[in-house]
Amino acid sequence: MSAEIEVEVVPGLPGTLPPGERVVWQGRPQWRAMARNTFKVRWLAAYFAVFGVARFVVALQQKQGIHGMLQLLALISLAAACLGVLSLMAWLNARTTTYTITTKRIVMRIGVALPFTWNLPFKRIEAADLQLRKEGDGDVVLRLAPPDRIGWLSLWPHAQPGHLVRARPALRTIAEPERVSRLLAEAVRDWAASEATSVRVATGVSSADSQRSGSIAAVAEAAAQAGH
Image (cartoon, rainbow, N blue to C red; front, top):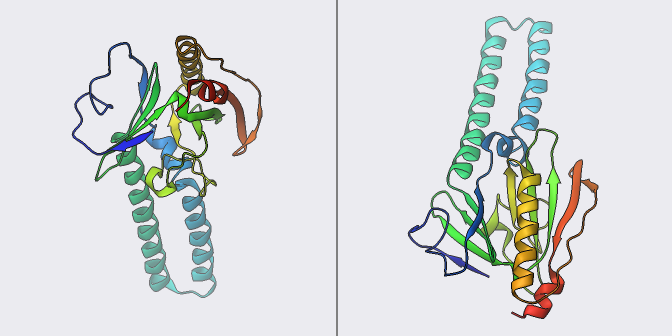
């Protein structure tokens, strides 16, 4: 497992793939879904809406007239600016991100001002979990095999929320998450077969982030047998 800062030679990858390794899937976050779920623009919009309605009612009750309307206009302008900045951040992060699944690893090309690449070999991944949302997007969350760790700030916003001590890298807000999870599971199986190791691919549904979640690829057994 490594992080590299360098000029991109192959789109989404730090260099040409070694012989015998090929790309299974490439994609990037959906920026609108990232704005909703990572940058919480809906929550912020709801907050400003409630605050704006309350300010409007106060202005009417106190007969503030033009002065009250100017204050309300200032609030609307502030809300538009905040939502615009967060939406722009979501768009930039999605635009500059490339997730790649190969036959041997997961590669995360992330970073807006300073792009860098995280290489996550299958043997360093303990498990991967699928999280689905009703809008159609979803996350593939990776659990690293101990003692490997990546700093949460080094991954954000490409990390599962709520795990700061042992950050979990995530393919965030991707389209067709179920298809991607199947491709990952197949790639892990093929890799395990080529390494002559065993691998457990589990299925199931549980609650996570108020949406459905299921384990799609548990590779701890393969990692233990393949070594580091």
